[in-house]
Length: 112
Image 1 (cartoon, rainbow, N blue to C red):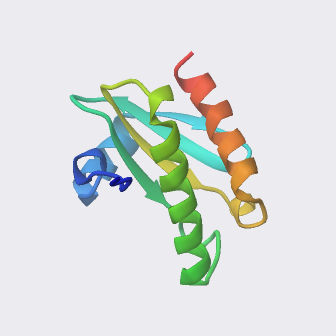
Image 2 (cartoon, one colour):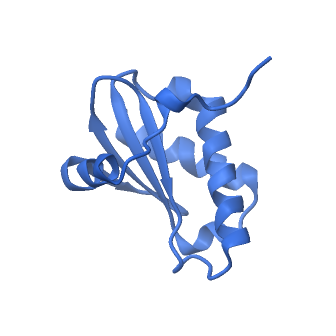
């Protein structure tokens, strides 16, 4: 069974990210920020800056965790929404379950 995140569900271009940042609504959680804007299909992107960690290995680990959280919980997001999740500095120190809890809490704020 193929459990990858399909390419048509990912935000890939810098222009797509820029559009979501400029036109989207921002919601803050304990460990992440979520920018949300309505679009034609559901798409998802992750940003982890060097402010979170100087080490690429750590940043990539956080990105993988956030992508997996989205992939397993995408049913909580509406079909016509583009979402960018930005990890905050605290995301380095927490485990997968805490990140997932924070993702759900922010989604409740956004899509309630």
